[in-house]
Image (spheres, rainbow, N blue to C red):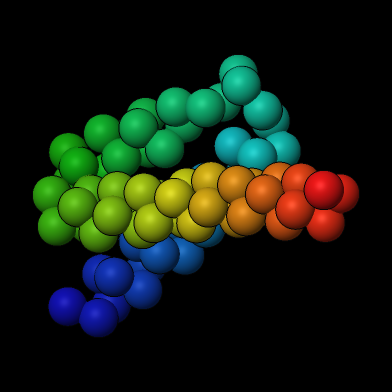
Length: 75
C-alpha cells in the first residue's frame, strides 16, 4: 500500500536524521522505533525498516565514495 510506504519512508527519514545528529548514543534508535510501531502494524514496521536500511546503506556508500574520491585526488 502506497500510504504505508509513504508514511514509513517519512518516519525513516526523520529517525535517520536524528541518529546522524545525535551520534553513537542513538545508533539503534531506528530499531527501537521499528519495534514500537511493529506492535501496531507489522506492515508499517517492515516498510519502515526497509527504508531505514536503504538510507543507512546510502549514507555508508556516500561516506565511502567521498573518502575514496578524496584519496584518489590526493594521490
